[in-house]
Structures are given as structure tokens and as C-alpha cells.
Image 1 (cartoon, one colour):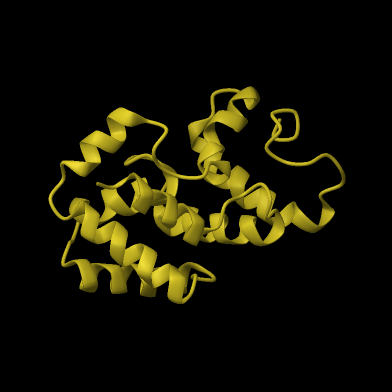
Image 2 (cartoon, rainbow, N blue to C red):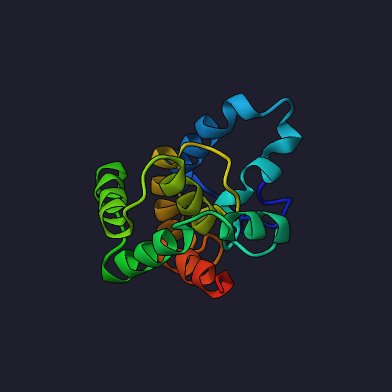
Length: 155
């Protein structure tokens, strides 16, 4: 379904089987039928925030959200995480720099990376985005590109 939806290029995916299996595992509990895969996997392939004006407006009203997005963008410009352990370190840096915790930290982080304040666990999603960008750089936007796009949406 990802090829038919235009999210991935056609061709053999033997080298990407492990990444695709992880994507499938992340989506497994979210699917009622196989045809839902492209919609549910969209967060991997989208460029991040702004398309949903209501979500963007709601997030902009959250105190400290802009500080989180700015800290994320700055941290990603220095170095992108390369796995769940590095994601934990990045998350901690953003928390320390922004002073935000809990939902005040995670809503803006998720919004900056996916365009939504709800969705799959970031501990699982961020490494998939990062690895997806390495494998399909023209299809899966990098974490840094997503954070830069988020910055452009802020006042």
C-alpha cells in the first residue's frame, strides 16, 4: 500500500525489510484493515506541522511551546539522534533548554516532528523517522527539516 499511495518508490525492498517490519509493528494496533496503512504511516512521510491550521493554532496557545520547538531545532542543527538512546539524550537536552516537562514538552515535540500533538510513541517514532530518512531521503523528511518547518509556523 505504501508504494501504491506514492509514499515509497516501486522496486524491491529487501534491504529495507527490517525498517518496514518496524513500521508495521508500530502500526499493528492502529489498523482495522490493510488499506489503512498509508494514512496511519503518514507521520513518517509528512514534512511535519502547518497543514492542520487548528492543531497549529492550539499548539501556539500552549505556554512554552515555542521554546520547545526552538530548542529542538537548535539541538537538531547540532546533531540528529541515531537511535532511541540518542533520542532520549536529545529529548533531555530540549527539556533542559526549554524548561518544559510532561505534556508541555511532548505536545510541541510531537507537533514539530509530525504535525500533530497525538500519535505513536515518540520513543518508537523518532528512530523510525531518522532511519527512514537515511533509507529514503527523498520520501521521509529528516528530523531537522521537520523542526525547521515547525519554526516557520511559529509567530
